Every structure is written in structure tokens, then in C-alpha cells.
Length: 54
Image 1 (tube, helix red, strand yellow):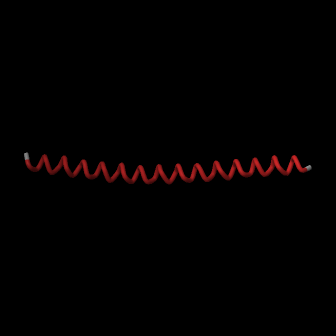
Image 2: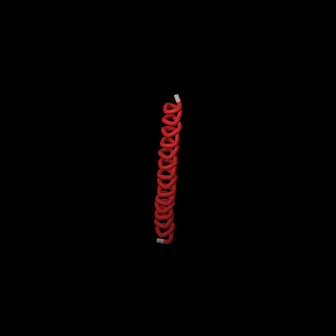
């Protein structure tokens, strides 16, 4: 019974570690996606302003 309890506790800790790693990866992906979207929007805005000047 004690071994089963420790096994469950260890598996929960491993799951938490995996979830933390996944959350860190997903947060970085979100930051990367936002920065890429910002660059794309800036490029579109820059093209629009240069086209207006012409």
C-alpha cells in the first residue's frame, strides 16, 4: 500500500513536470507567434504607407 502511494505521488510529480515543460514550450510558442504576427502586420503597414506616398 505504501509503495502504491509513493508510485502515485511520483507519477503525479512527473505529470506536473511534464505539464510545466509543456506550458513553458506553449508560452514560448505564443510569444514567438505574437512577435511574428507583429512583424507581418508591421510589414503590411509599411507597404501600405509606401504605396500611399507613391
